[in-house]
Image (tube, rainbow, N blue to C red; front, side, top):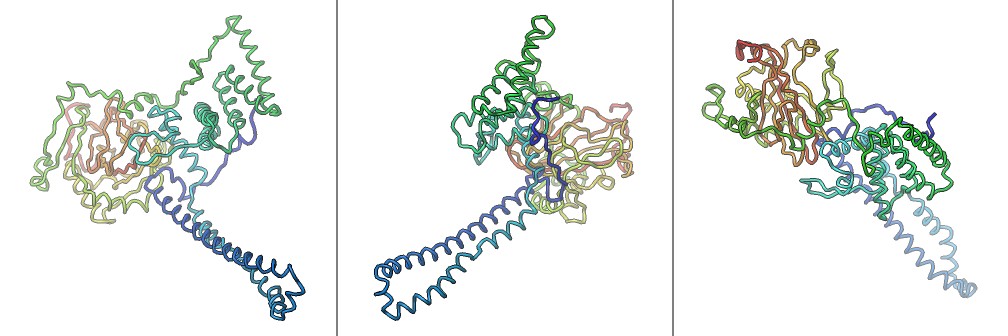
Amino acid sequence: MKPWIPSLLLTFISCTWHTQAEFFTSIGQMTDLIYAEKDLVQSLKEYIQAEESKLSKIKSWAEKMDVLTMKSTSDPEGYLAHPVNAYKLVKRLNNDWLELENLVLQDSTNDFIANLTIQRQFFPTEEDETGAAKALMRLQDTYKLDPETISKGKLPGTKYRSSLNVDDCFGMGKTAYNEGDYYHTVLWMQQALKQHDEGEDATITKVEILDYLSYAVFQLGDLHRAVELTRRLISLDSAHERAGSNLRYFEKLLEKERVAILLNKTSAVKDSVIQGGVYERPADYLPERETYEALCRGEGVKMTPRRQKRLFCRYHDGNRNPHLLIAPFKEEDEWDSPHIVRYYDVLSDEEIEKIKELAKPKLARATVRDPKTGVLTVANYRVSKSSWLEEHDDPVVARLNSRMQHITGLTVKTAELLQVANYGMGGQYEPHFDFSRKDEPDAFKRLGTGNRVATFLNYMSDVEAGGATVFPDFGAAIWPQKGTAVFWYNLFRSGEGDYRTRHAACPVLVGCKWVSNKWFHERGNEFLRPCGSTEVD
């Protein structure tokens, strides 16, 4: 039986996902919340103005009546001897005070409450708050940011400075706790405690912070610090029943550990604990996590001088495509093998804005294809919203499709629709393949167009920090640049998958990332990109 598991902390709130939820997965849609909040502030100001106007009238009446009653009470009979005063007294008590009563009872909240009620149905949900908190933790891990840096808002490329107070840090830690993530619970509860110790105002008490922190530290295997923190909690609240029970339990475990050490049955320090109360981040399901995140930080990029010499810039006319002879595209090698190229000025600012305008109303949580069933489903490792645009949606879509066909020399007739994606808080797509592997033969069966032979990725925004496209297998990082596009083949000419093309979209640290992409398929391209003489040509 566990010694300390408060029912409050084990209660998980389960909600149904609504279409307006998951705001955290798209910065583009989160901008709507900015305007909704502004509307609420305006409504609140109108309510305050109405209340102030009402109070001003009541105050004026009170001041007038104060002067009058001081005069009348000094000589009641003499005051009432005047018949007009007597009449006005009767009139005031029968009529004027009733009007004042109605004024006091007048409800100025109706308009504000009505507006708030309407807006609330489009508010973020509990899932959004959890998702947003986990996004901050993802950025913290990927870019090696300590809680202090995030709490003080010291992020690169930001126009605005924003900070987290004690209650915010506590909320972050509590979210991690509810997810069973004791590593981040400790980091954020420590930050909350630090800011509290520095004298920052907070509604959360030190006792509440220590309650979570001591147990999370215990879960990470640091018994000595769990005892130390629990003793501090008890010094602040000696009647804290659970803390007393925990302390006795922890001390009993410590004694067992001491005896075991004496008998050489265990080591003195747990594997998860490093010196100074710093804890190792637990391993997870992604084998190339360290490589992937290092590339996202711009570390470990394997761009050697020798490789650099093999990369060139040129004008690309699509093998003398008539549409590109007069106005060829600027082409730059990003990587030699596999060959990845970047094209410049693929999209104008006006075209980008139009595509975003078309896509925004259709944005929905981005999905991945289940390798076993081929069915599209949401996944935690892909945090963004996407929509699909058809040629008949607008001439700009048809123009872009035609442009991509001219550049690549591949047909768009069997390609997938244009996908437009907007990344939210910490938006990412962890390492993945665009093509289907041999163990998932039915991934694109329903399309009837074969495998994804190539990827054409348009960057529709600059990103202030983060958001790179990285290839962990060979150590490449490609940074978003508005109006440019990158292109690579997912399959060798033989039709075999090029496993080196496993790639990822790094979390967006600062900024709003918009991309669009076209996946070209095998069917229809047999003669446009014929087979090679070997399996890996």
